[in-house]
Image 1 (cartoon, rainbow, N blue to C red):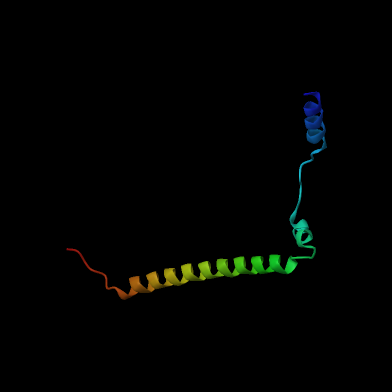
Image 2 (cartoon, rainbow, N blue to C red):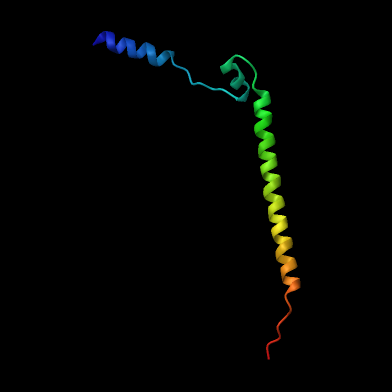
Length: 75
């Protein structure tokens, strides 16, 4: 029992929190992956641009459709 307690005490006291940031991603494979991070950022930018473009086209189509419809007068 004493051995078990001492083993756990040594194991727990020797453990440290793993604190990493984006710069360590490349270290996992042994080389830098900054090109991959740039590709992910570019894909996100293109997706945001496409969403914005689609929303703008939809609002313009809605505006054009409203102008094409004649006003109906109610008596």
